[in-house]
Each structure stands twice: as C-alpha cells, then as structure tokens.
Length: 322
Image (cartoon, rainbow, N blue to C red; front, top):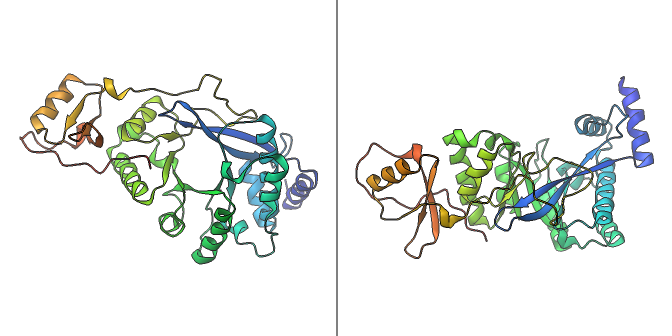
C-alpha cells in the first residue's frame, strides 16, 4: 500500500470516527478484583491501518497524531461508560499531543461530563516513543490535568529515552514497568533486582507500580512475592471489546496467602535460611518480617553467600502500599 493510500485510509478513519476500542484489565492481587482497564485502539478490521503500529505511525508522519489520539480517547470513554465498567480507565496520550499548542483545552473533560465519568476515574497514561526535551512544559501540561482531577501514569518505565527523569520530574501516581523486566523474571535474578529497585523508588515517591506484559504464572508468583499488587498482561486478560467485571471469574489470578508462606526474622542466621530453603524447594524467596511480624523485605535463594552464620539486614526489594 502506498503512502498516499495510507494517508487516504487515515483520513477516512478520522472522518468516520471508525476507531475500534479494546480494553485490557488491570488486576489488584491483594483484593482479587479488577482495578481498571487500559484502553487500546485499532483501526477498522478490514483496513491496512488496523494495526496500532501502522495507524499511529502514519498519523505521526501526517501530522495528525493529536487528532487521532483525541478520536481514540473519545471512542474509549464512550464505550467504557456504555459498558458501565468498574475501576479506572487508563487512556494513552503522547507527550507530542500534550504539548500541541493549537489543541483546544478541556475537550477530554467535556467528553467525560457528556458520558458521565468523573475525572477521578481516569488515568492519563503517558507513552513515550520520541525524545522529550521540554520537561517543564510537559510538567505544566500534566499539572493542568491533575488540577481537573485526573491521575497520571508513566508507561513502559525503563524503556523510554528519559523515563527515569520523567518519573523524577512528573511524580506520577502510577508507574508501569516495561515488559522487558517482567519477561522471565522468575529465572533472572538481575531482573528481580531491577524491579526491586523500582519498588523502592515507588515507595519513596508514593507511586503505585503496575507490572505489565505478564504471560506466565511463574512470573506472576514472583511479582506477588515481591510486593507488586497491580498487574496486567495476557495471563490476566487479553485486550478485548468487552471489559472484565468483578462478577466474572478473574482470569490468571493466583492467591498466595502470606500465612501459608514461611517467613524469617531480621535476626535470622544464614544457617536458618539455608535450612528453610532446603525444606521449601519450590520457593525462590523468603519474606523477612520485623519484630511486629510486618513484612519488610525479601531474600532470594540465589543471593545467599557461601554458608556462614551472619545476620540478615533489611532488604531493598520491599514495597509498602501507600
């Protein structure tokens, strides 16, 4: 298909508002419920721009990205409201659109008023596919959304050009860990260290972490043991036209009661740790608790030094929900 034909197809999609909205569930593990849905957009099924990659690439090249994203938000809000879905609605928006000087202000708020959704149920999910240079202008734009009652999420943490600086500058309410760090985390100690560090920063910045791209039960188990509470991925639910309701069986969720998991005190010795790991061969990690029995860290099987008696310090892979 030629570029001219793609531009023509894009024009037709925008003129006819023929955006196809899908919803992927975000699950809360501790409460075993649907926390919200991320809205994802596709072109018409019979169009060469059905793929989101093709659709958004040609829109960016044509200088119509802001217009396309506005159409996607409109479709998502209307269909989310029509289905009366529970929880929060995560809407993707690029920094380019946020910084578009000619885009009219307040359109999203008016749309929400029209469909009966309060801004407090909507999360602006910032997606970064191109470098962001004007951090102050971007921060001002997002503060404008916050002042209207929206929350902010930073998507694909660790994958963008400047995602760590964006986190520091924007202080989002949610951060979504890039799927690279989730893929195979159950057999990759370094990825667990990365995620543990993210959880530690999230605790300091009072942000909630969402792990996305979960496809294996083993990945979900490790993330739950590490303290990740909000999760998303094919294991939990694929993007689909109809969102998931709390009355439905929640797909993919694994409940791990902490009372059934062995724990160790802060003053445990290496010998005691080795003995516990020996009795529980299925465990990759043990939870560390303080004198009051509160979880304060994790220690991993493959992180143990050469056997010798010593004390266990509080560990960095700790996440306390704000």
